[in-house]
Amino acid sequence: MRARWASRGPLPWPGFVTVWRSAFVIAILLVSGGLAVTIDTSQGPFVILATTTSTRDSGLLDYLLPSFSQDTGTGIRYVAVGTGLALDMGRRGDADVVLVHAPPSEAVFMDEGHGLCRSPVMRNQFIVVGPPSDPAGVRNLENATVAFARIRAQQALFVSRGDNSGTHQMEKAIWSWVGYTPDPLRDSWYREAGQGMGATLKLVSELGAYTLTDDGTFLVLRAGLELDVHITNDPPLQNFYSVIPVNSERHPAVMKDGALAFARWIVSARGQALIGNYTIAGEQPFHPMGEDRC
Image (tube, rainbow, N blue to C red; front, side):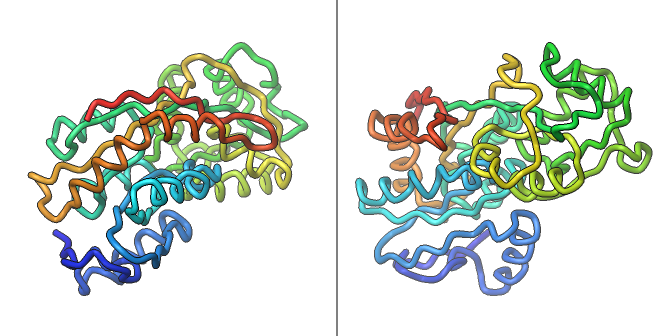
């Protein structure tokens, strides 16, 4: 259980955890998320958001969150990690609200009583990217399942997030549709990065490998990567995001009013318009589908 400072004032992150846990929490988050912490020194109350690396690496958070603060007068500090770790922060009460993209894990989180409510926010899509030379011959194949089967058959290098993120969970689902579970200890062609999406894409580009990524992060980094999009617009690879305020009855230190304010703002006409207007090099990665269920 974390300790809250009563003033909720401009304390440097991570004022939301007890002193004896601070160094440990910082180390875990930095290693797992790759400098994933935002430092907000603005005056006044603040909400702690646990979210995914794709919302950060796509540039969406830097675009979106200042408007929330301007509209509500409430600051926001975020930690961007994989969805699994973001939900774990909620389970510990170390975040007020989570913005994640792994519906099965979100349902478990709600069933456990850690979430107050769960509202759909937006969608983008997962895509399969790989080297321009396409050694596995997957370019323009029918779908990602067929592509993964071909990658396995050709033993072409594939790099997984390997971090229980929403992207990693989707990747494992695709392998289950193939009927195979790759193991880095057994399959020399399969590796795990254990990093966020941006760092994983850079590694994939350096190795000339394939991976599964969200299109928003890829669009931001595309110019610096030696990677092509091989599979896109595969209907099962739609990527749905939800916002969940952490249950303050389960975790009394949670800033309930601020968490609810953010959850309602991001699915409001204002928040949804901002999401819909966000573009990367002229392309719209996120499509609003907000519904206030709080």
